[in-house]
Image (cartoon, rainbow, N blue to C red; front, top):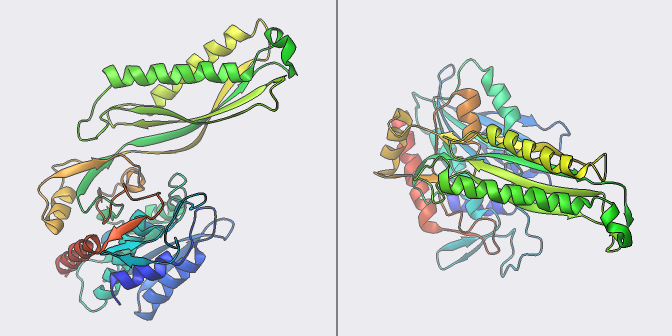
Amino acid sequence: MSSIDYLEKLIAFPTVSRDSNLDLIRYAAELLGARGIEYRIIPSQDGRKANLFATVGPAGVPGVMLSGHTDVVPVDAQDWTVPPFRMTERDRRLYGRGAADMKGFVACALAACLKATERTLKTPLHLALSYDEEIGCVGVRSLIDILRVAPQKPILCIVGEPTGMQVASGHKGKIAARALCRGGGESHSASAPRSVNAIHLGCDFVAVLRKRQSQLSEAGPRDTDYDIPYTTIHAGKINAGVALNIVPKLCEVDFEIRNVAADDAGRILKSLRRAAERIATAARPIALDAAIEIDVINAYPGLDTPLSSEAMAFVKSLTGANETIKVAFGTEGGLFSRDLGTPTVVCGPGSMAQGHKPDEYITVEQLRRCDEMLNTLLQRLC
């Protein structure tokens, strides 16, 4: 079977993050097991999802790890012209949810692992498949916990997120947080000036976010390898209010910080907490209990692999690339680098410009180029 055949099988598993990925993991395990490849399945605490880690090659030797996530984003309310969970080939494009992000790479990685059984590897090839990447690189952490205490850690990790087969040395870190804004008790809107409106507190806090963003864009640390070369702050969701004639007592503002390596996201968050406290303090003469509490929902580190590293030189030699990039989206690479100390590079087929959209696709040419890269990798591992 070719990588396209495997992709067709993978797309047919509707592994939206809110649902189970076990059928896909079992399918991958059956493929690997049938070739005598050793693998381990690491279930989630509730048993509904799982990671998979497999190794081809000699035991007791650190190897090169191919990493991909198995979950995809929802298709709800998107206007697809093809079935999202059945691969459709048209004009040398392969359509389906996850085709680019990132089942295309997973298909190529599976094909490479199966090919590896036909060769005598001196350096092992590892395969890491994870769950719940799309909701904040959540699932892979239990896999990392196991690898952290393993006798041998991977000497290199290639995260196959879609980069158009360009070699990426880094991505920004991220903190996702929620500001819970509390006014006074609910009251009739006819008496609104006698209460503290939680939505007003939330809006004041959003104004702080916008001001801090302006400061970062004008004078913050910069990394010109990114399309947006500075740290960004973004308010993505507000939840508040019951009825128009009721002054709301609660307002939730979900926001994020995506930081370049030279910026300290924790320091930025502390400054936002101080600003939130100033807003709440100003409201307390009217409502003694007024407050803005900020909780971190999720966070993952950025990735910043040195351009002069052996890891970058090796992966560039696999693709023939001379130039490198950094990607705007987050990956599990930062966790592998920080928590395992494993040099990590991002390189995979497809484009994130197609990811998360209706009629997501990857081209046949991109899969071919990924297969070529992994074939060259196998030659090196021999």
